[in-house]
Length: 382
Ligand code: CAA
Image 1 (tube, rainbow, N blue to C red):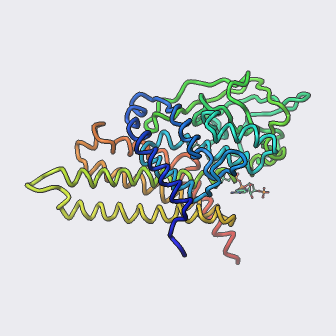
Image 2 (spheres, rainbow, N blue to C red; image 1 turned 90 degrees about the vertical axis):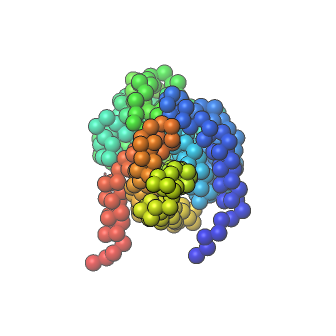
Image 3 (tube, rainbow, N blue to C red; image 1 turned 120 degrees about the vertical axis):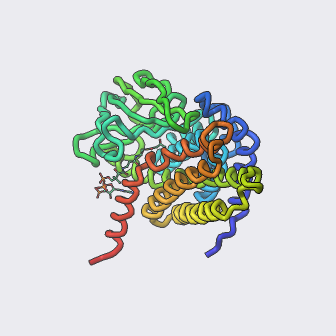
């Protein structure tokens, strides 16, 4: 087992680290406080290849693999999780179209996504009554001449008000999971109505909106994959997406730990820096140990995906462990900062608010356990 990064992986990580430190981090607090979608940053991420890290060069991507993608996500997330969630969803949409799209779909939509021309991608699966139970979605798509006509409502759509390219799930027949299909819908298509942005606890610079489809027509060629294969497409995309959110969780946790170390060296109590107290040193040792374990699980899932081996269980284990760890580490970071951890003068309160959704989106911790258990029972015979 080799833990050494390749030249490409090092390059992508360093590129992401540079833009994270020089561009993303300095505005992270304002992006959060002012609920400002960092639109211009996505153009830069696109120019650097970070919106299509695992996308072939032929479609404008960096073709740098899944491990590189996870490393890049960790870096951008350590600076600003609001920015990195949009980056994650854009990479996810681009990869899905690359995997299942026709040549025309890839040339048109993947290049728009990874270059930043589309600003961001969106992943419209969840509905007001169908989150964990994705197969229960009700949005419909019916064929009318040379168009598909979409009707229904979507909920919690990341970057929904800005996304130039969306992948949207809709029901093309009543046959449960097998009745779902996936469509590419461009932002601004008539009949696509963007609702009021949610006022969220964290990730306040990320745009989260409900979408309504009212007789929204798209050409027949915007069907992604085969009719009826939509559920499978969603599951495949989410397996990969969970690696992205695992990496996000690791990035935020790392930032929280580093902020705690810096603070503990400076803050004095009882005549010495609080870093000298064993209680705090042990806390930070545990934070680092859990974080390192999380990073390994995340990179292991990424490596399996990159090697084109099954990785569903590993992606769910990574998502479960990294997101729970991130919440624990950020909570400890606030504790170490005392009263200063509870005000916005220090970034740890933002880290904790941003981490909270990680155990919820891209499948809750409970759904990850369900997937992990299902895979264990599949693997171990009678
Ligand atoms: N890869 C390929 N196929 C898969 C699969 C996978 N990972 N998982 C399931 N399937 C296939 C199954 O093999 C099965 O196929 P057959 O019918 O041919 O046998 C079919 O899909 C149905 O599978 P299940 O019976 O397991 O389906 P289910 O209805 O029990 O649901 C679930 C499974 C895991 C709970 C799924 O619904 C799920 O993942 N729910 C969570 C949804 C989620 O993560 N939403 C996040 C929204 S996106 C988001 O948050 C983005 C953002 O903004 C950041």
